[in-house]
Length: 365
Ligand SMILES: [Zn+2]
Image (cartoon, rainbow, N blue to C red; front, side, top):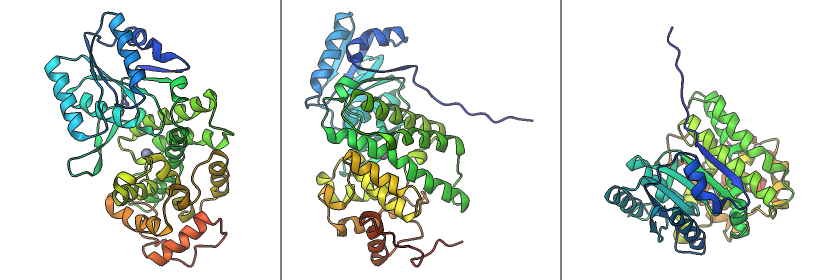
């Protein structure tokens, strides 16, 4: 009998603590990274100072460093970074910065087969550890590209604490969305629309649950819990071979908001958090009150107005979302397909109404 087995990429270096940014050179050396020539990517903003600290630390260890400091999450930047890795013979690629920087270098490293180390300075989404890169193409549209799980992840919670508070709230939003994403996935499996994979789903749900008990988002301890959850989300996606365990209808709504709002879009995790309330209501999820309590306690959005959006904009996004990805079956694939139905759904999601959605387009058998 042939036994089918699967393998999962797991980073060989993982460090999460206060102050580990200083130790990046020794961490890389201790975990067998080839330090012949390091390409270091960063953004132009305030996190550049962290990247410069890492660059000078590496140089002090005699490492040749190529510092690219203008990355902002564009596909052409990933292409030019890949070209630089090839031309200069970089042996390891390191990204120090927010999600845009990480995704740019992640894709360049994946396409050139170079070891990649993710050093996030904010934990605003699960891209810090996922095998996926979300980048803006020449048409101005953001798309997800298959990349590789980072070979190393270094999270300095002291640096995370200096990022704007909205970034950590966004991280919580992206993490909590695993719970609604798995509701969608399980339902898709039950209805024979998609293959449901229990192990990655268990990982994704287990990653998300601890944040429901957080009392605050200011301490290093809280940042560490959010970081651990997002790191496990990356593992869930790697195990599934797709973003499915961490991305359901709430992500489709957020992608629709991105398309609608352009440069006025809010952080991915903030939009996903708001949309998560909509899809939890659509599923008539029993833990909706817990979700709302958590969002209120931690300052996550509980109404469109909290993100400067109108209800009409959210209605439009709920209607448009499922068309963005027809292969992903969610609760919105068959239900809530008219503006009137979505209006009712938003009333349940945002007004805390105990109204039943039964009379609206029941799930077909
Ligand atoms: Zn996400």
